[in-house]
Amino acid sequence: MTERTKAGRAAAAMAGALLTVAAACLTAPAASAAPAPGPTKGGPFCAYLMGKKTTTDTSVSVVRQACSTQSDADAYNRLQASSSTLLMTWYADAGYSGTSANVYGSYGTCDTAGYGFTPDDWWKKHMSSIKGSGQCNKVRLTNIAGTYADSYSLPVSFGATIYNDNVGYVKVWHG
Image (tube, rainbow, N blue to C red):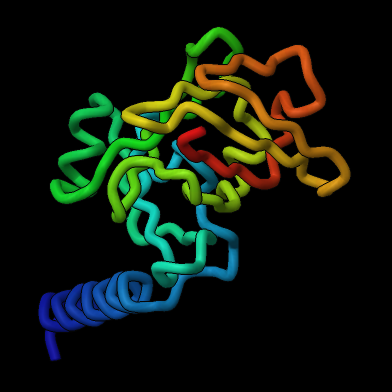
């Protein structure tokens, strides 16, 4: 075997090994790290679609969520929630500024039963103000520890209260 043939075979073997490692990296399951929180999943603009479990159960869960680095409208388009209704907008800063997330309901605007749910881990520790939409004009906030709960008229900026960056549960309704 010539030196050129040996070098060619060695290069081919090295390339094959690199492709095998690359394929293993692409197909290997992700590490057990938790998913990125809140807006960092795809951008500072997020939209959440909430759905009631039954017509008599007012607890809800996130049906879908989408985030964008471009705009609220782009996040909404990514959510593909054309049959949903905007319930409220969360803001990371007091005074309705900073990173925001639009929350949509799959059962129309708020009624007296409303929607109640637990924010994701990022929003639990970053929410500071909320604006309601449609008929959603009341909100009840519970702190993360579950030791305090208060109701407010929307919009509400709670940067100077116990709920600033400390929201464990949100219920929004028409009242």
